[in-house]
Length: 547
Ligand code: F6P
Image 1: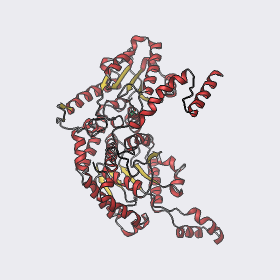
Image 2: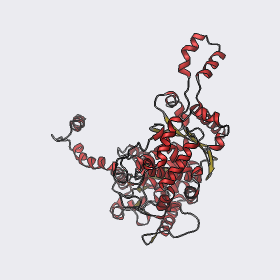
Image 3: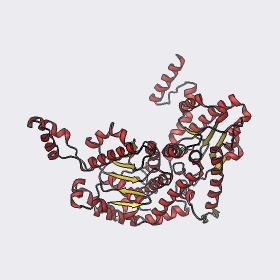
Image 4: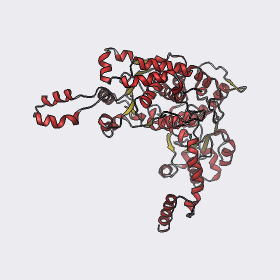
């Protein structure tokens, strides 16, 4: 299977990089750069005019997409071929949102579409009945608190989306999320929770994840101690592929929802893993989110490369990492409601493409996934933007910017818009020495002082960024954004030649942890351990014994 580096277009891109002008010169050379380097599609304005790319670079990337067979390989994913080769699985998160007319999706003799629709109908019915108080607790009361217990893909997607769509959660029970193994999130919640009005939803594809199991066991013990063991089933729902474990735990038979091995955890928000989100925003809005994602799926499959948002996002990302040498990518939403988007994208992008071995087992000869990080843009301006403007490490950015306020504070959102646009201009165009000097002269500074200050005030510019704008952060828009990033990750995996759908790198730590747990609980060290491990265990033991 060829990767980008094997294709003739890669050599064209390598040749183009050193010739590339500054962003300022790119704007000077084309008065219509915005028109040439922005796309309006699927409800989004995708403006990459501030990226450091020109027409030959984009043409070479389009050639690369053709040479890699992106169109055919995407079709293979959508039809359910087992493209996750290391796990021998299909990759069918897109089957979770085939809205509109039912049409069979036959994979291995099974109609996946029918399976998905049936399970979604059950899950949404349950969510609506919890939301409206028809499903009641063991004490006969409506639930006022729903606690999602899960981690990774069983937490980040629903947690991010509930926060993003808070505007749509009126009249719903409060939905909270517990993931961390240290127990503090759960302890804080349980302090205030009324057991007779609390529903726990255990989300775990495997139901074996240590963090989720330990939180679920503590929650069950808390509930039992207050309401008695018979109450457990009416307070525990679950989403998993593991029926046996749900039986053993005591999850209510009607409150269990299926997962399938062809949905990766980080791609699972549109499955029943989204049940907490469905409780928060209701069935109709959950379906609207699916509809937005489906719209992006169709756009991805049909739009020409130059208009194709996921393909453009993938190309720009690869350009920044492999040809401009930028190893990190910041996600900067100008909307507090998207505060958890960077964390969600960290898993989506870095667990998917954070690999350095190609699908064929050979080492990847070029860097792959950048470090993804970020913060709401407004806060970021007052913390790390200094480095982004003038630091030695350069960073590519995505700005996400709704026009309409997500909390009915339109005058303040207009300030957020102005901030985002100002920062975007400063990142791209900077401020050169002549501009700084003119400004300081205008302020009446002496020549000697100007000479002193000038180097500190120059902003080099040419910091690449994409501005993604949309009218408002509603469920369809969130669905479109999530599918945009999912397909971006897929296209990048084809370019880098890695498998975006496995995660072997998380296993070693899990295995070692199983061995280390008893050594922490009953402190002991052995001569065969690393001296570092021995030192840490000694510190734990001495601290615990002197407590
Ligand atoms: O450890 C990583 C991981 O396997 C993720 O890929 C997954 O989203 C997360 O753990 C949670 O897994 P589960 O849903 O099986 O509890």
